[in-house]
Structures are given as structure tokens and as C-alpha cells.
Image 1 (cartoon, rainbow over the protein chains, first blue to last red):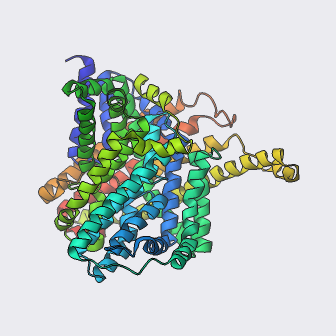
Image 2: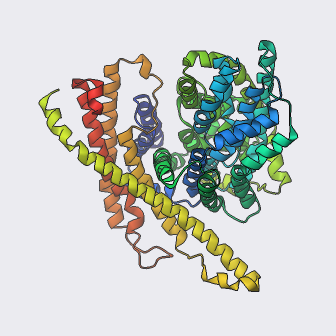
Image 3: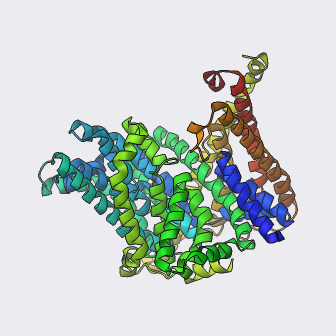
Length: 446
Length: 189
């Protein structure tokens, strides 16, 4: 075994071992990098430099800001307003409340960007409401948790910012726009699935569509939805960077939550910051230690070796894409989103772009959707756990009820994977599409 | 409860205060980040408008100072490391708990202790290596946009993170060891 191979074994072996020994992932990433640097005979000083470098990215500042925006809007009581708007849109259909749940998640996800927040917030209102109207509790929970994944795709999504930064040179604006159609497709496939089940089980319809009510609800919700407009229009039009737009959106969310919706007072805002800090605590240190890990991967040419290994199995791009999806899905089943994005992106992006012909933006959407599905699958499915807890239903029953919706999600995933325009058409149409050649070169040359 | 735990538990209020202070610092850093980044955007727009429209020339007094980006990033570094230490206390860090239900409780406790020790080792490395780098290579030179401020402060978050991790990891380790001897509810007290 040569020195390079030994160092790779140390890096990946110790990492895997520590993950299975239940070490906090952020510190397992850091420790395996330390062991790897020692195995390579390098100075550990690099840790300090790389950790600071990893976290000193202005683009990454968007992550804490988007998280803060989501928390403030959530505390401001936008959930019930968005549910009322969704009800005015689709409540008239068969299985109306299931549809409302799905559409509300599309709106809410755009603001919070968090599937967990969506499940907790929308679920705590919608699940009891659905059960009262005669919907099965497990079905209601399944609809809630699967639709919460729309929020990961619909911009602004902080996970997309993490992907853009990790991949390097990808326009956050393009990536944001790229999430809209896959998010809408996911919503549509879930609605079709819900509709079929609702017809079979004869779930009730809501009130007839009323344009006056719709306009009234839209007028109430417009203040919350404007936060998304500020971010997306600002970034796409080139007025702000993603980070600047996120900072402005935080101030805007504060004003809307405190003065317009009056859902939270200043003390509540201060308390809400605790929640922001607790979430950031998990994400930011992981980004810092992943920078060291990523540097070790690059120095050891692990992305090239992984690419050769994967391509060695087959040269059929369609099977390679399936293979990438399977790898990401399996990782999603055992790990959380941020670590997967930070660790798998540098390894799999060259395979996706060079051998599968995927656009880096399309691959970003694919990664996020795969991770989203991972959040709903045992054994490590944070959203599945939250959904079960909110509905007070056993996890295995919720999983069983979710099975048809997994099919809907997989169909959407395949559309995203094989049809690049699903992700790229909106960025292209709105002029926000920037081919990520520089970013790709970065990854390949690193 | 063994007597030693009763004695050692007296230090817990000090930890509670430390936690509150560190949380306060993190929140202040987050608010500072948001305000500075927003001010930078405002400053840029004011400069642009004051040049484009004569009647808005008074806005030229609001500027987009060059130091904002580096200050924001430095604040984020400090917030990242301090909040990460807080998450040790709250047990907030992501870990793979998939097999917890299938493992005997005592094995999970032992694994927790092993993980605590490993994190402590990483923390010590971060303090030693981080301090060495910060005071030697790291402190050579100044922030580009703040020429009087040493780059020492840019790298100082790494050893600081190590110290904060050790502080909270000691408590976590103590709690995990204590859980071998006392009931679960008593550990939380």
C-alpha cells in the first residue's frame, strides 16, 4: 500500500468508524482530517488556516441570514395565513385539505427553507384539522412530511447556498431559480398521489373556489410572500448578492413579523434568536471542519479515484445517473443534509458533470432532492421523526402511509435527473442562467 | 448518589451562567452581522442614487465602508465556534443515531464517553495548533480593509473554539460518566 492509499484509508476509514461510533459528525470530519494529515506527514497548522478559510466566505453568510429569516417569519405567525391562502387556491378539490397542506408547504418552504420547520409548523395546524375532517392520521402525516421537502427546493434555500459554495463558482441566483420547477413538480406529483388516494377513500371536498376570498387571503399573505420576491428578484436582477438579499430579507421579516402581523414582540424576537443560534451551531462548525476534510480529499485525488471507480462499473450515463442517485439516497438515509452536501459534492460532482453530462446546477437540485427524500426515510429521518411526534403516530405506520408518496418523489427525482430543462428552463428564461464552467474547473483542478 | 457527584454538581450554576453569556455573545454577533451587511447594502444604494439623481445627493453621507465584509466574516467565525461549543452542552450536534434503538443502553453510554474523549482530543489539538498558527504565521500582516487590525483576530477563533469545546465537553463527559451511577432524571438536575 503506497502512502497516498494509506492516507485515503485513514481519512475515509476513521471517518466511517467514528460516524458508526456516534461521534458528532462535525467533529468526526475534523478528527479524520487530523489523522489523515498525520498519515501524510503534513503539519497540522493547515487545520487552523483551512477552518478559517472554509468559514470566511461571504456567500456562506447567506446561510445564517436565511435561517434567521425563516425563524422570524415562523414566529410571526405566517403559517395560518399561508394555509388560508392555500385553502383559497385548492381547498375546493377532492381531498382538499391534503392539497392545501401541499400548496401551503410550497409557500412556507419558500420562506423557511427548512423541511423540519415546515413539518412542525404546518403539521401542527394541518394534521389535527385533517383528522377532524375524517382524513386518516397516518395519511395526513405522510402528506405533511413529504410536502415539506418542497421547501428544500423552493428558493431561498440555505442548503442550495451550501451546495453552491461547496461546488464553487455556481451562481446562487441560477440555483435558486432552478429549484422552482422541480419544487412545483414535486408538489404536483404529491397532489396527484393525494387525489388518487382521496378519491379511493372518499375524502371530503372543501368550499367552492371563491375569487373574492382568494384575493382577500392573497392580500393578507402578500407581506410574507414579498420576502421571497425581495430575495429572488434582487439576486436575479443583480441588485444584491445572495448574502445581501438575505440580510435585507431578515430586516424585512422582522418588520413584517413585529409590526404587520404582530405575531411576535421584541422579547419574542430576542428569544427566537436562540433558535437561530442553535441551528447555526450545527451547520457552521460542520462547514469549517469540512473545509479541512475537503482539502485532504483534493490532495489525495479522491474525487478522481471515485470517478474512475464509479465509471469503471459502467459507461452508460443513464445507469451512472441511477448510481449517483442511489449513493445519495443511501447517504441520505443515514446522514443529515449539510454533511452530505459538504462531503459528497466534491467527490460526485466531477462524475456528474464529466461522465453523466449533468449541469452542475441540475446536479445541485438532484443532490438537494435526494437529501430531502433521505429526511423522510428511516433509520435517520429527521422530518419523519418530527412528523411522527407532531401527529403522535408510530413511525412505522407513518412510513407505511408514506410509501405511495415515495413513489411520487422518485418520479420527480427521475425527471430532475434525466431532463435537464426541468431545472434549467426557468434560469434560462429569466436570464439568470450562468453556465458554471469556472466552478466546474475549480472542482476538477482542486 | 455518590457523594462526589453532589460536590461536583455545585459547579453547575457556573456552567449555566457561562452558557447564557456565550449564547448572548452569539446573538449579539448574529445581530451585528445582519446590521452591518444591511448597512453595507444601504450604503451602496445611497452612493449609487446620490450619483444618479441630483435631488438625492444628500444620501452621499451614507457610505458602504470597505471594512464591512471582513468584519462580517470575522463575526461569523466567532459565532460559529462559540455556538458549536454551546451545541455540545445541548447535545445539538448531528450524529448517527440509527442504531441506538438496537444497542444496549450501556453501550450507547460507553460510546458517548468515547466520543466525548475524542472531541476533547480534537479540542486540545485546536488549542495547541491553532494558538501556534495564530501567534506565528497567522499574526503576520493586517486585515486589508482595516490596516491597524492584526490578522491574529482572524485566526483566533480556532484556539478559542478549542477552549470553549473543552469547557463544555468537560461537563458533557461528567454527565455521561455520572449517568452510569445515577438515574437518568438525576443527571439532568
